[in-house]
Image (cartoon, rainbow, N blue to C red):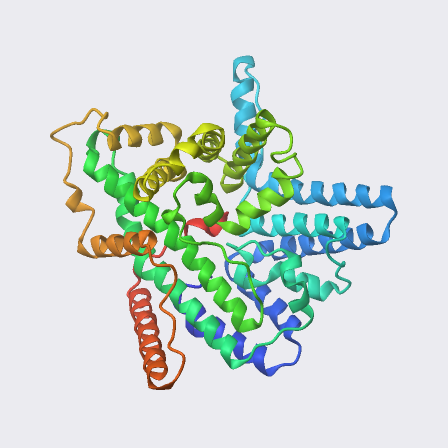
Length: 470
């Protein structure tokens, strides 16, 4: 089940909210509702989710109550168990295939079972690791109630696609939270904005992006290639940012404050700044639990560059078990190293529009690897983008076949909002009639946006979700 579906909007969520607000056992209702939500798409993996919750709850209690040696032992055992589950379900096939390629000259090989990737395993694994580390560091108090901890692990708003909510960020709200009318309205607004980003922008440009990336290399003209990657760049931003906004909005409706996950990343003026604005909960997780423990920038330039490269290789691998994701991570790592070494100073002296164009170009090149099915596909697509692809003139089809007026409108709107110099929405007037009028216009626009989303979903329009299985 995804948020942008008729089932969620008109059946699951209203019934859940009714029970959540009427019954006094908030955490129990949220846990049971989250398990139903998860079971809707992956019922066979509900036990795995609960096993992860039990594992981290138990290790957390042992870390909190043991001596120095025992605390270290249970920390490393807990981290190894979390990562072991992730490696098995997400990377067994990839590393098995790599091993078979290495053994092929020896006419040897291994046969591995087919493994289905559980929904959201990367997200709830990182949650568990950060919880154990924070308990070990004594940054947070251990959670003594398994029900409360299982609720935190299974919370459906952020379970399958983030943002990565650390226990420390909502520890107080697990025990006590406020769900007044003002917060409910704030959450509803953010949810509708996220739904509109996902349904009206991301879904609309997704179809031409998918079609253009499926065109054989010899039939893909340069304009078509640029339109395809532009559509995908807008799709992945509003697909993921829209889902994050919906998750944060639902969090507000339930009394939780989830961390922000996007801050106009395409308006960044360097790739370094881009990563402060894109998937903030993931980039900050890697910074706090990997980059800084590795030494960060404290060991001199060479060690800093090594740490950056390693972090972004792992960031790429986190996104998917494929060489395309590894190259995508290496590409961003190389750009960050270059900006830290020498390019950052040059960028600081250039006009803002030029540095913004540079950043967007570098990010779009990276998205080619992220979207392509294979590395040869990615390199062929890049050759088409830069006019280096050999074309079959008789087979080339005009880009207009894939890119209609609705996609053009969504692409223009998406890029305009992503690149605009304005920060945030206009502020409401202080009071009186202007404030009432402003509130009425705002409510009307939100209602219109929600209505258009419902009409689009009711028409069974294209509704993919990129991050659904990360």
